[in-house]
Length: 147
Image (cartoon, rainbow, N blue to C red; front, side, top):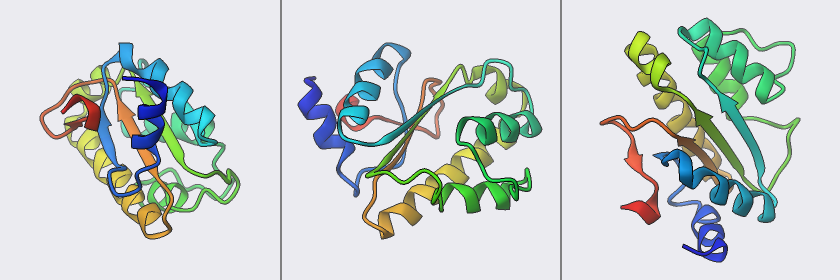
């Protein structure tokens, strides 16, 4: 798929959400997102094995403010605000998620729910918010062009 088609999909607020993208497809989407003026953040979760480590990794990658409370509600609040990172849209690339999903499946599933809720909140503001996960799991749909 061409970069122009990637940008068209990424700008589609109605389709934004949490999706699986194979590792080899991430670079093209990241490039298209940057070209579209989106804030892009790659988060390597290879060493994340619990929610505490996940919160730390996301807080660092997304430059969360000092008031971030390192819990699910605080994560939801930060992801649904991002006033300190103004952009036309957001793409969060979660890489090497398999270890976290394997070691803490319930927390992995909760994180996906929080990301999906953030995408819904941004949709209400007419701003696309994408979370692209390189790990295939039953509860993660494939990126629209891959369906």
